[in-house]
Structures are given as structure tokens and as C-alpha cells.
Image (cartoon, rainbow, N blue to C red; front, side, top):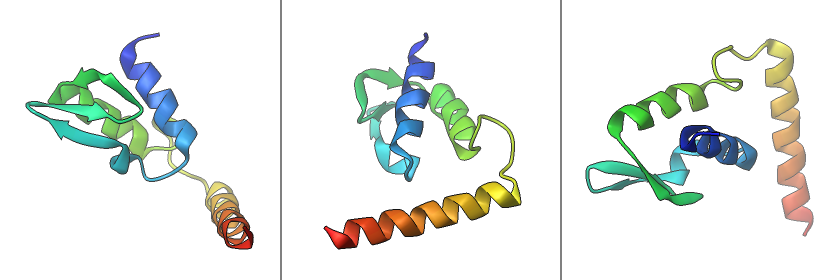
Length: 82
């Protein structure tokens, strides 16, 4: 598995705002989940395109949007219950 695949898999597993997991590192980008891999701008843009789509390219269906909305509400309620 390439480092781009590893980063994409790790970021998707977080199920959150993926942009918060990246930061500028000099001329490149660093993912806080796998900080040893410094990405070039091209690699970051490639990942940004893939991470902006839920499965690497296809748009969400209305059913997937509804499921995600319900899951977000459940997660929010669960976090307030603690």
C-alpha cells in the first residue's frame, strides 16, 4: 500500500472533517495521523479530491446523506450523554 493509500484510509476512518487533519509543513503538507509522510502539493491536491468524495469519486445518494445525518445526530446525542 502506498503512503497516499495509507493516509486516505487513516483519514477516512476518522469520519470527520478531513481538512483538520492536515497542516502545512514547509513546502509540503503533513497529516497528523501519519506525520512521517510529507506530501507535495500535487499529492495533497490528489488526496483532497479523493477525500472530498465519500468513496473516492462517487457523489452521495440521498439515502446516504440521510443515513449520515442520522448517524451524526446519534453521535452528538451519545457524546452529550457522557
